[in-house]
Image 1 (cartoon, helix red, strand yellow):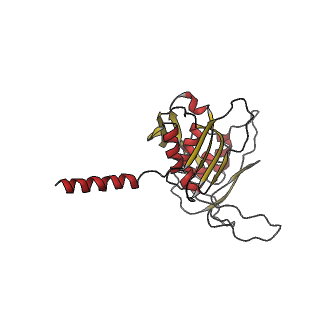
Image 2 (tube, one colour):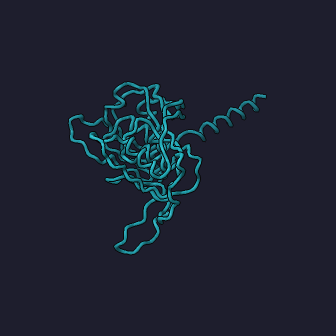
Image 3 (spheres, one colour):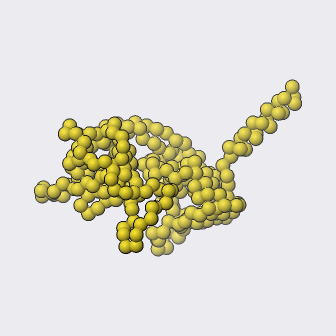
Length: 273
């Protein structure tokens, strides 16, 4: 019986160790001088190494737990809200430089390995929650959908851009758009792609995120133009976006949806290296 018990204990330990997060071989965490000039460069991630400039702990948490939770980049991490912890997690800035043995992929070092570093050096304890929150639902207007199906050539991230002739504009990335002076443009985008970009990447100031409630499948080319401004005061971003969507048979309506949260239960300033 004792041998059987020892076997199961050894097996349990092996499982626990197999699930342990990979760690950096060498890591440096240094506080930044609050009076030093800031740089727009947040740092770099390489296979086997991270070299971050001055960032807050909440910024590191978003990158490690929301953007790269399992070692794969996830744009949805931008809409995850971070709560809890002492006030300094948003204000104190730290420079992190860490190296790993071998060359683990960039997603592994910026995700699981950074998680292990933050939990070790900042004594970080964090948990995930989901709650019902206010959202804007993207729905098909009563006039019916007038959005054209995708026709503009685009390429998917990870597949590499297709060849193009010298002097031509490179093809756009499917499902990723940009804000133009007079509107928003996207190519090869699903309705879910549009909602994610509208919530995170269009430099549009909305008081809640956008979710897809259209029930429409397929890919589309979005070429939305801001409605003509006839009022004495400029419209806010919601009015601009909703007005542009109505021209293609879509609209935004207040609704409820599930929100993702990361809750900081514990965080301590790191000790000196």
